[in-house]
Length: 189
Image (cartoon, rainbow, N blue to C red; front, top):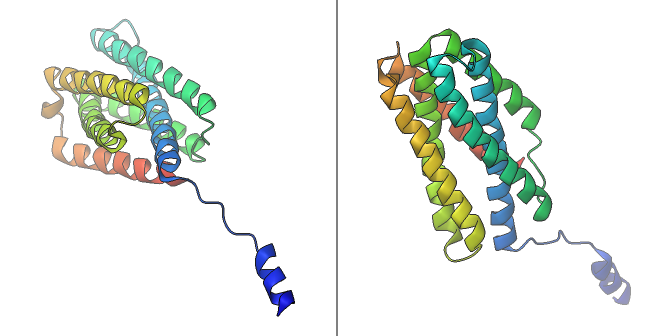
C-alpha cells in the first residue's frame, strides 16, 4: 500500500489556470488576432483602391486606427505573457483575401465588409467589457475605446452605401459568420 501512495504522489496533474488569467489570455489573444485581421482586410482593400482615392482615404483612416489597436495588443501579448493564436498565418491570408475580394467587388461591397466585421467586433468588445467587470480596468478602458472606433468604422461603412452592395444580406451573413468562427477558434488555439 505504501507503494501505491507514492505512485499517486508522483502522478502529475494538469496545472490549473485561474479563471481570471484564462479569461485575460483569451481576451488578449483573440483581440490581437482580430485587430491583425482588420489591418489585413484594410491592406487588401487599399491594394485595390489605393490610398489617394476618395474611398481609399476613408479606408486609410480606419486602417490607421486599426494599426493603433494592433500595436496595443502586440504590447499586451508580451506584457501579460499571452500565447498568440496559432491561427495567425491563416487569418493573415484570409483577411487580406477578404479585403482584396470585397474591393474588387466595388466600393459598396468593401463598405459592406466593414459594416459586417465591425458590427461583430463592436458586440464582441462589449461582451468582453462585461466579462471583465471591475477587474483589469486599464484593459477594459482600452477595449471600450477600441469598441467606439469599431462602431465609428461601422457607421462610415453605412454612410458609404454598404447596404446598397449587390447581395448585401448574403455577403454580410457570410462575413459575420466568418468573424464569429475566427473569434471562437482564436480564443482557444
